[in-house]
Image (tube, rainbow over all chains, first blue to last red; front, side, top):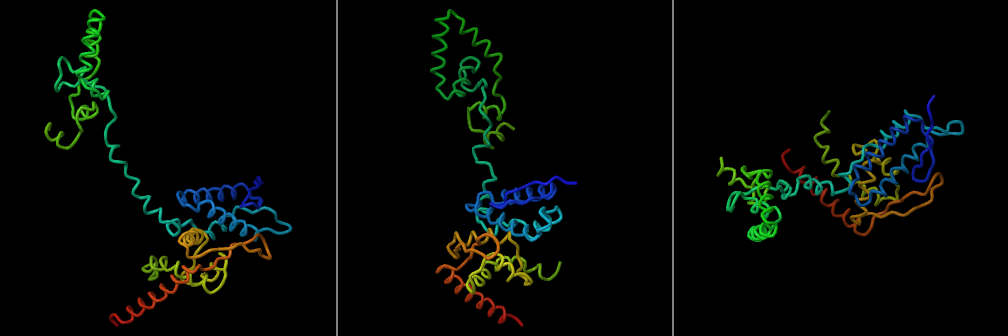
Length: 190
Length: 107
């Protein structure tokens, strides 16, 4: 004995047995996915549902009110797979968007000490690159902070010097925001 | 697998032309179009036809109107627009041209 599920096909109620329901749900979900981006998707889905409803009606009579799994299978086969390429040129133009945008190749920005042009251990240099500001401002700020805090800022600098890793590989240098990571950079360092 | 497979892409490409022909001859709804094509080499299914018709309508080649049917809900009856008619004429000419080329080439 199978459970019966009532469905609404474009405004018509039909009763399907459980496995028939699953098969039809799957077909319609696939159709909907296939028509992704089609400006007439809603309309085409309604047309398909209507066509399925018409086909369901053929299997029903005064003494038969449920469409069975085998009949649903037959209906789905008769409908055929959704050929979105026949209906929409978005298919081809959509193909190009699989490629990630050029900027995505850049690694996420991370905080490193940058020794190129560093005054002490590259902490201010790295912070400046990370924050996108001029290292000189940070350095002046640091010296002022050191004076105001009677040297506590110097301790902070020393601590940061130890906990912030050095940008010592091309990847790290790129992530530090120092210089664009490119093929030449890799070759130079190889 | 057979010799027909070699022309599968051509048949698919010709479908739009054939639909223009069918719609030009008669005011039809989708089941009529399927019936006309069934049993021919161009037999197709709803899954292909609905997306194709909606594209042709977007391109301004066909249009439809709802009509009551004796049995069941109202149906979409398709007909050619002016643009569809002129495109059908062009395609028919081009098809004749292709046909002539094929006949003339080789033996």
